[in-house]
Image 1 (cartoon, rainbow, N blue to C red):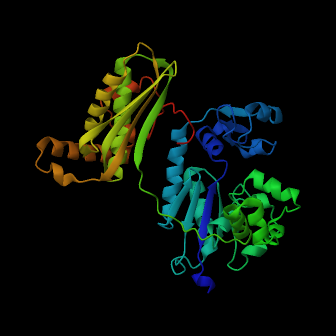
Image 2 (image 1 turned 60 degrees about the vertical axis):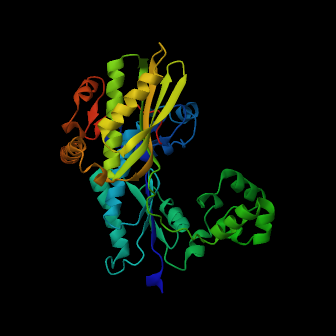
Length: 404
């Protein structure tokens, strides 16, 4: 019976943004690091040891930890490392759900013959991620997502906990109610006012009383979670409905050549992503924001649908010429595609130019896949390298946020 029980694993990257910054800059290792703009998006464990918490204002964080080093953060760095972690997890099971940038669920159900020593397999997975990324992860395993997530977060960093089937209620009982994933501060405070501070105490409250206090939906959710009940399955990654690439231009610019180069680069990134997913787009949109915060946005239909960056670029430049009508510097530029569908190359089989573009794009993708994005640049992209630093996966642009 136990062998047939679900084996759900939760993997959480420890202090993700701050840890990536410490990997990228070894001088930050062992030091309190804060990532964010205005409020703390991530804090290293050296900063957390001094009382700093996520979502805290920098003023309060600096009061608690005057020696903290503040890093604004770059989304692209974190996206790169998140994808590396996801790929490493996929080596152990194809059932990997990305719950957040640093948050993954895996399903090992039915893998007993493949992994007879489940604990050793998870230890190996944890160590493999550290060996190949320098990032530590915490791992929890149970029969449900809820209990696995609680288990992974008990002893960070490098936490490790397996909750055997049938012991879920015993495991949860002594823990504070706040440990239940998804229960907010307001609900926790309401329960505390009624003397309910542990999950075991919450389990003693009748369902009817919880529904009367919190409403039917939330009350039942609290009742079920106190018992470790969580029917949610590990989901396959959903197909994206759109793909976007965007950048903030520090200080703003009206340099048309520079802006055209940026649009070309963003179109390249979108085309490459579409081809990697074997998708093509029917709609392309361009969004501009000026230094005075005035915004302009428009979209156009792509006929035929495409994943060729030259076709995407032509459509984007046409929109740019129509939208960029003010004598004010631009501070933000974004290109996106939507109405995605499976790639259908048969539509272009008798179009010589389309065939040439198809083979050229795949050749460039192959070169970049082997030698890095910077191995091949179009003309305007070479000019951008004078303005931006590079890394193996491309240019280091300024992004407007730490997560999409």
